[in-house]
Amino acid sequence: QLQLQESGPGLVKPSETLSLTCTVSGGSISSSSYYWGWIRQPPGKGLEWIGSIYYNGSTYDNPSLKSRVTISVDTSKDQFSLKLSSVTAADTAVYYCARHYNYVGCGYFDYWGQGTLVTVSS
Amino acid sequence: DIVMTQSPDSLAVSLGERATINCKSSQSVLYSSNNKNYLAWYQHKLGQPPKLLIYWASTRESGVPDRFSGSGSGTDFTLTISSLQAEDVAVYYCQQYYSTPLTFGGGTKVEIK
Image 1 (cartoon, each protein chain N blue to C red):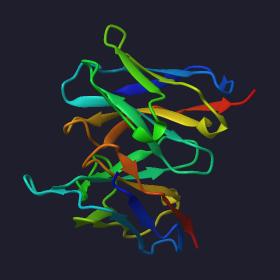
Image 2: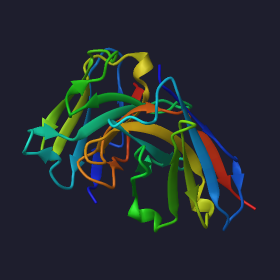
Image 3: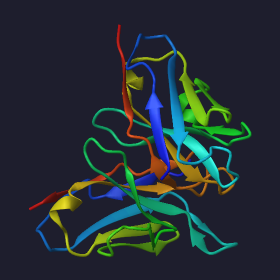
């Protein structure tokens, strides 16, 4: 059974960089069929897609985040990571990693991590 | 960007009754080349990650009870829970995967009346 697990600091200071890692187990990240993505949910709000990465390093991200996003992959460890720079209180959210099918970079999310709350505060 | 609009924001339904959630996309998510609608539905319970219910607008994910069904095409879609159970209390989201950025609807909260 595929499992995804987010890890990283739960508290980040304003203007600093949020860094999270997602570890995939029970399957390989190096599959041609899937992308690996990040989604977040601010308190009391809906879901927002942040971006996704393919095992070869190809990425798509959400332009609404104004180029603050860097997503990388480490196939040797079956991990992918998110960096979000210049954070503000508006970036406080539960961050999920998830897998989606590769339909030219798009897809529905069939496996999700449990999510991790990241709070931006001094 | 494709904007996904859900209605209603919330609804309260009696146990055993039907719940209907609507989702409208700002442009068609139907790919003419394969006649598939790039639309998924998720159930999100408090403290848990979202769970995939439906993809291709009407294909039920493995293990999802058959009281959940999806319908619609083009820009208008519906998720129906035919007989609401207590464990169905959750927020439901639609998502388009026709193009990036991938976008979700605002969510519909389903409660027991």
